[in-house]
Amino acid sequence: KPAWTPPNALFGPVWSVLYLCIAVAGWLVWRRGGEGVPPLAFWAGQLVLNALWSWLFFGLHRPLWALWDIGLLWAAALAFAVSAWGVSRLAAVLFIPYLVWVAYAAALNAALWRLNQG
Image (cartoon, rainbow, N blue to C red; front, side, top):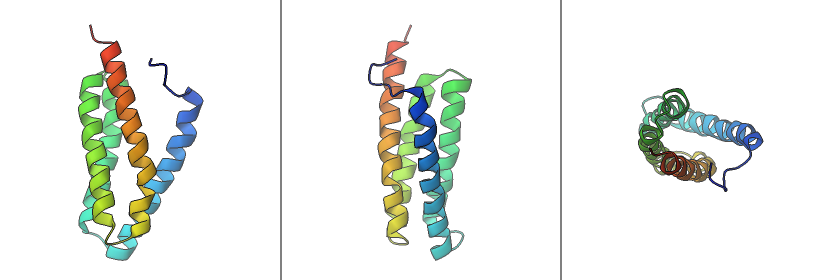
C-alpha cells in the first residue's frame, strides 16, 4: 500500500457521508425536475460505476480495469454535478466532496496497480 493510504477505519465513515450526499443530491434533482431529467441518467450511471468498481477491484482483483472504471465514474459524477447545476445548485455542490474523494481513490487505485504489477 502507498504510505498515503488512509487508515481502514476512515473508509466507512467517509463513504457513509458521501452516500448520504449522493442520495440527497439525486432526490433534490428528482424532486425539482421529475423523472427523465438528464442529470438523473448521470446520477444512476455513477451509482452503477461505483458498484462495478468494488466488484472489479475487490472481487475480480483487476486494479487496471477498476482504474478505467473509476475514471468513468469520476466523469459521470462530474457530468451529474454540471448538469444538476441548472436544476439544483445544492445537488451539484453536494457532489464536490464525492468528486474529491473519487479522485483520491483513483490515485490510490493507480498507485496500488503500479506497486503490484508483475
